[in-house]
Length: 312
Image (tube, rainbow, N blue to C red; front, top):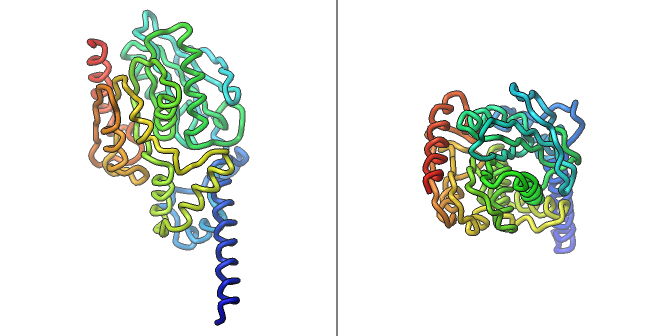
């Protein structure tokens, strides 16, 4: 085969790989119609289904509200990058307010059980829908990048009435909090973070490994095109680096068997946190830490942390 033909083959392969990566990135960051069926967890897919998924990308319907708080609540909206819907559930003589932020492809009702735990401890809770989720405007996500602005705007809204504000986030929500703390130096009382990823590129790689697919070169291409589509350099979206700006007390929770976030990423975040910090690792637990099996330990860890910072 001469060099000319070889060159055309390489060019064709390059174009196809980028076209596939562009499609993946778009589907990963843009939600489909709410009635659309969500793609199953990669671990539940057959080899043939995984192969097809490599070309088509995931089916990712817009997250819709699945349930409502059992207690009386107030619905209000915060103007940010988009119009955000929030729920506020008050408690009498509250110790403060906890603002809760959900993960990727989630919405605020997924945080109701955690909010209940905070209310039992005496805190008013605010549950937030990021852009593209639940009752908020939009139809896309930037995987925690622009969501950091939304964290800031929700904090500023609540801070007008409440000075003791705690930020809680799980997965993408935790990453968004770290970026908000880095970008805006929010004067929060403390933060509680569940399984934030250390870098966007590494979490994209983890998703390819879940399908037993080599990460190179598709993970880098997907990361690149996802950033282009959402207007930022995705390779610099690194919550582990953002953690260096966090000086308030922080509780970091991690599942030892997390297949989306590695222990090295979690340790890097913990090491970079500048204030009082507590790292809790849950044995035999995956990316979702708050499960029925771990509710008791989760409650104990959060209670202990909040009690300790109340004495500072």
